[in-house]
Amino acid sequence: MGAKLQTLIEFQDLELQIVDIRRQLARKDSQIASQARKLETLRAGIHAERDEIRKAQVHFDEIDVDVKSRSGHVTRLREQLNTVRTNKEYAAVLQQINSEKADVARIETRALEMMQGLENRKAALAERQKSETAEVQRLEALKAESEQARQQYSGRLATLQKRRDAAAAQIDKETIVHFERLSERYDGEAMAELLRPNPRRDEFICGGCNMSVQTDRANSLRTRDEIVTCKNCGRILFIRTES
Ligand SMILES: [Zn+2]
Image (cartoon, rainbow, N blue to C red; front, top):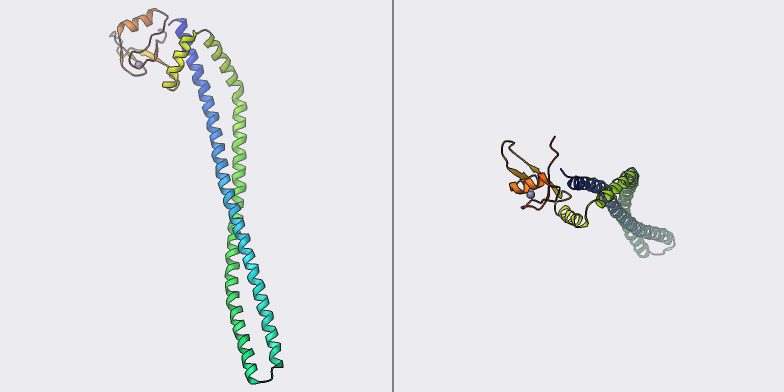
């Protein structure tokens, strides 16, 4: 195989390696982004729940004040019992006391239920805050991993890019443009090997699309160092050096 095609193959190989590294780094970046979104959602939930608990706490405190004021009222009514003069007045005050006490009991039952509910919610919130800490740690770990990979690959990436540029400098611009267009279409595989499925027959196929390649094309590829493309898929054909 001629030097021109040899350089193109090298160029493709370097491009594939560069793309592969970039993909790995991009995958890490997208993991970080998705973890950050997850954490954001978790935090929004915690924030909202904390607000709800605060509101419920305020409500509970109001009820507590109400119970205290009603209990104070009951105490004052009891004192009043000592000062009433008639049985009728006595009965009226006693009825007020009983009614107020019944209200206090009812409100206290509700307050107790509320307090239990509040405690449960606070415990659940504490669990969510614990998992927030774990998710923050996971995010930090992902960032560290990504940074480490970036550092690990930076030298290799720079070397590959230097070699890629050196290879590109040996190829004419038109071929590079042609190559890049194919590369985009075939996910980096702009070139295809010319295959000879049966060694006893002079028949060739394109390793990219498996369609047959005319013998005169195959021959010009074997004898001359020039770009020969597959008529079907357009890939640049090459032959492995026959050893
Ligand atoms: Zn083809």
